[in-house]
Amino acid sequence: MNADRAAARRALLDLLDAHAAAGRAVPCRVQPDAGWTSDAPGDQAYGARLCERCPALDQCRAYGLAFPKEAGVYGGLTDLERRRGARKAG
Image 1 (cartoon, rainbow, N blue to C red):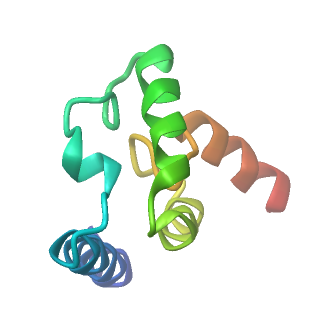
Image 2 (image 1 turned 180 degrees about the vertical axis):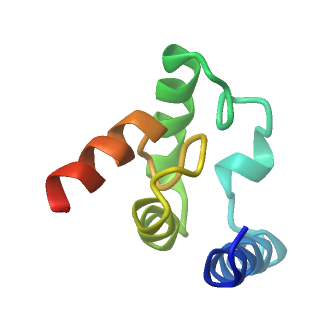
């Protein structure tokens, strides 16, 4: 993992921890087995739908779009959706 990605990931995880510590529901922390990192598209789609209620949705999505090769769901987008978006933007 390169230094920029590692720093961005640490910042995202710290943000998720802060929301959780403040009593805000962070879906990926409340339901860790909801398909966030599954290889199955249906599982990832389920996890992505749960993201809609997350207080860190925008920051998580920004991370996922910045690092589209990162596997799993980030900010309500599956890895396939993020890779497609990165190709369109690039």
